[in-house]
Image (cartoon, rainbow, N blue to C red; front, side, top):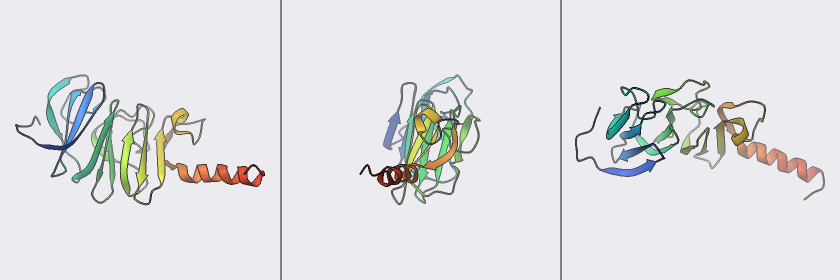
Length: 170
């Protein structure tokens, strides 16, 4: 739904082809090239939208970011939502299906923030844990396969450190 002006944004995030803004009420609006559904529902893939368009979310967002053709937001309750490109699992819903509407990131994790990347996403949970998912080469958890759901990097990195410690390399 195109927005009637003026809309005041609390924050804006942009990438090379599109942008998203977040209002003080937690409403997400996106515009630009809708490459993979990143501008939201009701816009044909490949169309360019020149005015901010409301992206209906299951609940108001407190945080919003976009990169490439993937957007992610976090609600005040810490629920993570992503939409747009999902070729490498960067939405984190366990699939490789592009989404034009926000879907919840798998795992029931309470998020502080989520940052989408060009083929992966990473987030920090409310306890400071670092999680990533998407392209295997960029996530670093399993080089043989893309991670379709969040994987906690803190545990992996701590595990690697303890093996180094055991080898006497500290």
